[in-house]
Length: 215
Ligand code: GLN
Image 1 (cartoon, protein in one colour):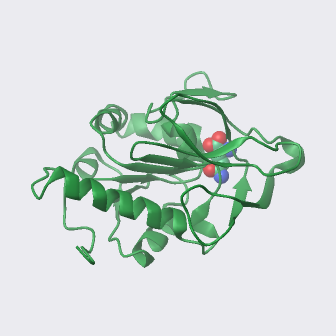
Image 2 (image 1 turned 90 degrees about the vertical axis):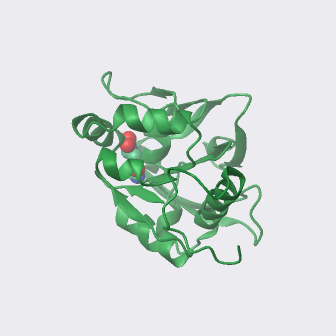
């Protein structure tokens, strides 16, 4: 699997994915994208990543891969990029339409620019998850096919959606790559393995980049 490495905290995702038994590679060019069977979009600055996707001719190939069903996981700026509509962004920012949702950028406002909280995360055993939000978005509209995985539990933003899944595309408004809790990444790695199994042994996009532990 790949980690988009145009801007943002790609290296943190690489180290967590490695600890989860995957063998992630950095993706910066179209040929590198073509060689991976799943992609993580890191936190960072979504408008900068959007511009670099265009500069590196990755925007259309990436949209095409998502349309074809490539599993993806985006955290924070990655969530923004995976949306099909984004509020409070630059008019020229481009998005990937990987999830049928409307996301509001920098949604939590200045007072709570960055904060941490404990979330109940659907489908994960082991109790609440510590979540770190840094100038984070929230999901303002989630389409019918979108499963809501977590909401802000309390405070002024109580009830806001901060983790979603549509098919094999996952997104979190927070940064599971920085807390040491690897459950979301593990969920993603499992989902990629499941995709490989259902896609059969011959998949034009499959590399040998995941240890096939237990398979
Ligand atoms: N505010 C950033 C953006 O608009 C996202 C912040 C983050 O990824 N931590 O892209």
